Image (tube, rainbow, N blue to C red; front, side, top):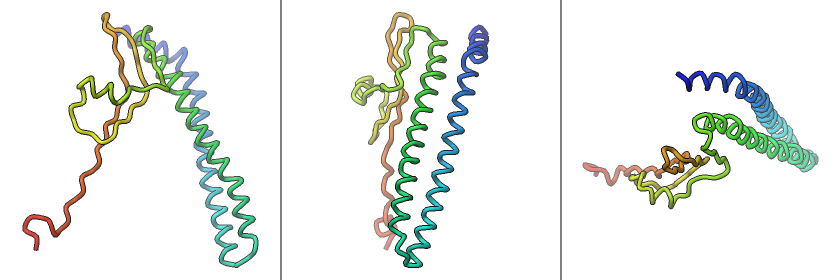
Length: 168
C-alpha cells in the first residue's frame, strides 16, 4: 500500500507534468509523419503527371521534392528519437528510482550478448540477440544487472509439396 501511495504522489507531482510535455512532443511527431506522407503523395502525383505529360519540369519537381521531403523525414526521425529518449530518462528513470533510489537506468547502454550467454538464463536457441536499456543496482547486498532482451529466431522454411510425406 505504501508503494501505491508513493507511486500516486510521484505521478501527481512529477510524472504528470512530464507526461503532458512529452505528449505535446508526440503529437508534433505524429503531425510531422502525416505531413511527410502527404508531401510524398503530392510530389509523387506531380512527378507522375509531369512524366506522363512529357513536360521538361520532371527533373525540377524531383529536385524540389527531394529538397523538401528528405530533410522532413530526417527531422521527423530525429524527433521520434528525442521523444523516446526523453520518455525513458524522465518517466522510466523516475519509476526505477522510486523502486530503489540506488538503482540506475542507462538508456544508451545494454547487456551484451556474451554476458547473456554466460548467465545461462536463456536456454533456448536463437539467431539474433537484441537488448535495450540497462538497469544496474544492488538488492539485499547482491549486485544485479538487467536489460530488456529480445531473442529472435529465423522462421523455418516450409516444406515444398514435392518433399512432403505422401507426395508424388
